[in-house]
Image (cartoon, rainbow over all chains, first blue to last red):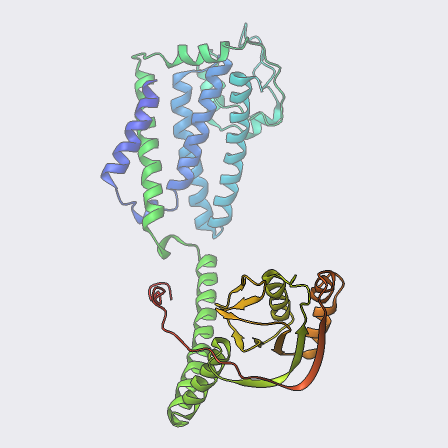
Amino acid sequence: MIPALGLIIGVVVGVLLHPDVPTWLQAYLPIAIIAALDAVFGAVRAVLDGIFDDKVFVVSFLSNVVVASLIVFLGDQLGVGTQLSTGVVVVLGLRIFSNVAAIRRHLFHA
Amino acid sequence: MTGPDEHPGIPDPTRREPADRLASEPVQSTTRAEHHEPAVQDVAAAGTEATPVETRTEGWSRLARMGRPRLTKANLLATVLAVALGFGVMTQVQQQHTTGLASMSQADLIALLDSVNARSGKLNTEIDTLTRLRDSLKTGGDAAALKAAQDRLTTLQILAGTIPVQGPGITMTITDPQKSVASSNILDAVEELRDAGAEAIQIGPVRVVASTWFALSDQNTLIVDGTTLKPPYVVKAIGDSHTMSTAMAIPGGVVESLRQLGSTATITSANVIQVTALRASSQPRYAQPDKAAG
């Protein structure tokens, strides 16, 4: 409940402040967001599985973000940044989909 | 591997697949090593069909139970992360809206450049065409423009029936011995003639134009545009005479339906038909050109 409120607060603050993304962060922010979303959906699924743990959520959230950004950074250094970003997005998207499917089965049995 | 012994009481067939371990992030193993708690956070069990082990409302109640405000450090931390996520999402969304070319990839930029170049080429060609047209209008004196305007005027005059015209066409003579021809029959004939490509039509002494109307008088004779006619009615039409006479003679068409009314319609084609009846042009009182729409 509190984290959900936090999400809304974050959205509102983002809308109000209208911040500029620094150039060096521009390539990583979208990937980091996708990775964080993956962690969030994974957490909801863990809640429904009855195995949620706050600490694990925090750590997996951060590590997801860091690892995803690292992969993109590495890709940029190797000159395959765009392709690698696409790959990361595909993988994370697949995971989000499967997590959402599990959540759906838990909540709607469908 | 996470086994049922780690999660007593939670039989869950949706996870525990070797593929999960490959897809899950590295932090998982370390976390699990540190805690002997159930620690599988994100499960990437793609394609596993879960048999629901809970009742219909259990999932929701579990969600509600976990959603209860708890003031633990980890929950607070999660909240901070959620705030950061929401902030990040909105930042990125707005960034996406505001930045134009800067955030596009090289391939996209090249494609964009190509399309812009192609478009500019097309526009240049158009400029050339228009420039040439303008030059010809300028140097050709006003002759070209005058000719275009004259052609347009003639077309409009023929349509409005303000000048006499001649050309190939047909003459249809309709007798009405029983006074049985209705105005709708004549209207049908006119419509059929127009459909067959008639460019100018005259009935008796009256030119048929866009606003022409047909009615019957008290003596069951035809009134066209206020002029009472006497049978036989003579319809002259200029156009392709073969097409028009065929159109009149089709089964169930004008000639046949007139015959059923006891009238006879005779059609003669001629190379030169003169449509000499005129119609005074009048200024429309109510309809005005809509400059905004035009």
